[in-house]
Amino acid sequence: MRIGFIGTGNMALAIIGGIIKNGLVKAGDIIAFDKSEENLKKAVDNFGIVGTRNNIETVKEASVLFLAVKPQFYEEVIEEIKEAVSDSQLIITIAPGKTLKWLEEKFARELKIIRTMPNTPALVGAGITAVTPNKNVTPKDLDLAMDIFNTFGSGEVISENLMDAVVSVASSSPAYVFMMIEAMADAAVLDGMPRAQAYKFAASAVYGSAKMVLETGKHPASLKDMVCSPAGTTIEAVKVLEKEGFRSSLIEAMAACSKKAREL
Image (cartoon, rainbow, N blue to C red; front, side, top):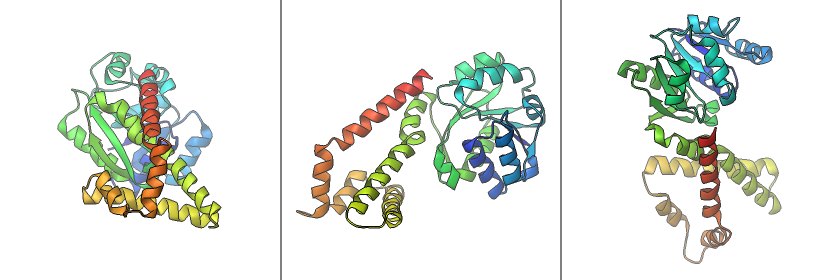
């Protein structure tokens, strides 16, 4: 099996790194092309994969093909490669806004396509990828795709109508969390803590809290109540967050994110 990538940006590199680290295939069985010579050289030098001369060569040599270019370039790339794609190939997309219907119309024939939406924690092996196969994808194809996604985090099959929600709750949300960590660290610095130490404490608290949600199975509100002692420091902070619209700000931001994803 050879896995091909059209585009070698950060997300492609995260996927490639996970595949190689977990031994799903060898580096020499991963091929890629990028119009940016710098990006392609980085991928080849860092991972030992095989660089190709163009997109068509990548398509012809790959059994699994990732379209890892930005959404605005999808139509151009599909127009270029659609005649070279074979019926047996598994095509995996990672672009927001590009629905299965849109993809099928652009390829203009019956193909095996899986629409996905990963997120940047994939760069550290902690990503979560939403997965929606079209009707031509077999259970064996889907198992193979899930094996790939599990090398850099985990995969979750969802109905396609939820994909825009995934963009806001998982794909874009690391930015919100980074902003929160930065603000938490700023407050700790204001209280006299060295900045490097402040980032470590803030990030560790967020990491541990997320792990508690995933591993205890308890409702986040219940876990919050565990921290809030009567007349204590935490409930005082929670009161300020509620007054300043912490929850509503997040909800409104995510709604705007989902709306933008639908417009792409």
